[in-house]
Length: 225
Image (cartoon, rainbow, N blue to C red; front, side):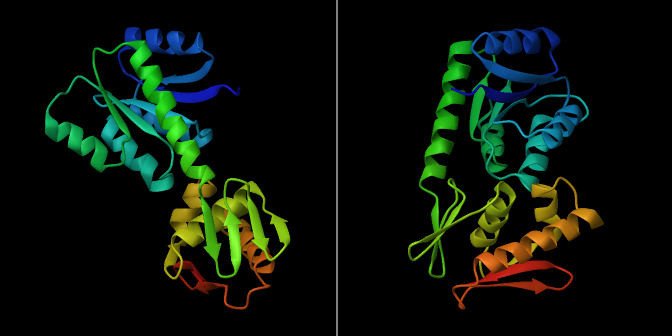
């Protein structure tokens, strides 16, 4: 089994180190960050499998960090750690994209169970993610396009770009947003790279004339099907 890559944001040094070391003895790879700003930079450098975020942190709190993460990645599981116990705080955590909420003090066993449950749920959702694109079937987890009896393999980035287009089909997919989400930033060179990937996807979808990826000048791309 591959190790789980986990990003932990916790400003209490003693607690952070205890959680880190406990998870590492159970074959996790843990990146420990003392505040939200550092955690967000680490997240952009190397996307982990799951985030465990303390709510009360200096520079950038856990809720704000989660909002920043969700702006570029709406799939990664997020668990909040907090001493807060008010229902309104719990509601806020879920409303901004959190998947689970663990109140301090907590046991390591409970944290690990919640982490594995979220990752298993995420894996099951991806396994069932076969989407229709006109007459094509798009198997996102396998990164395959099926048309009649033909199967076309997609690269990792092609698959994620097409996934986002399909999820927003017949709507404009914001160019800047998708560049930040898949490429890390929206500079000129990444924008040209995305144009190349769009051209590749058009070629792989050309068998069905009802499927079209159009350029909406100044905004982004739209998948019509």
